[in-house]
Image 1 (cartoon, rainbow, N blue to C red):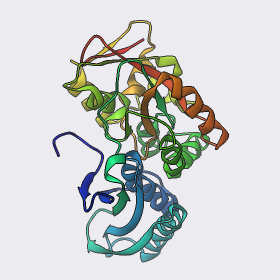
Image 2 (image 1 turned 180 degrees about the horizontal axis):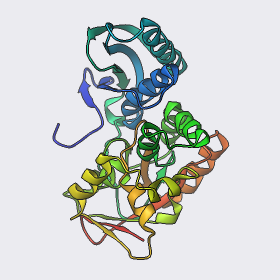
Image 3 (image 1 turned 90 degrees about the vertical axis):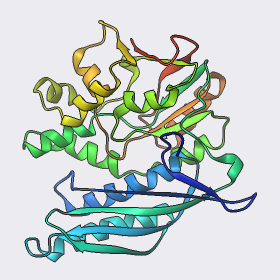
Length: 304
């Protein structure tokens, strides 16, 4: 609890620790089955970010039974269990309550060797930063709510959010890395700030190298920005310096709150190219090296 880690870790023995996390939220896509898949992928991601293997999961359900057909819940749970099975996790129960607003997610327990826990701190000067999924899901979700999102970009974002970070986590554990987190509600820059806050390191981000969804630029320029994006920018403005050459739309995307985003991995430069190559070979095609950890300015992120 000392740092804003992605999940809690409890050491059971010298050989075994458990990882515990939970996450649930309201629908961010219209299709109930896809929503179930996304909610599960999002909840499992915190275990993957810490290098662990999810073992068991429990459903968390809030459902407006008086105003919504139960078939909607059945589709959500079907999507969820399909993704749970894909991850090799066992569903062992859950809890549901009647609520005016639909919500779904999981409580997840995973395992890891105590010496192999990956924290979101520990990035070292000279490290390169790999991001495994494109940014922009918060903006796309806002456009979807306003019925202003093109179906193609919605489908791309849905596939990305529903994809597990399992393979990326397995690959990163095969190399020497220093830190990892997953990109969710605080946006890319917010989670980067957590990586170096209170440390003697800084970070430089190559804005044009950051993967984003095709068509996202137009949505940003239409002003379809979620409230969380503005809050993320305001909260971290003292730690972030964005060069004037960076397009405004791209600067906005870097603060965009993500749902079921990719892993952000900090590792030595000599290992980064090989890991990126392996990820591309294994189908994680949008993974990219997006920046580096620097010795100065300390505690600051520069976007150029």
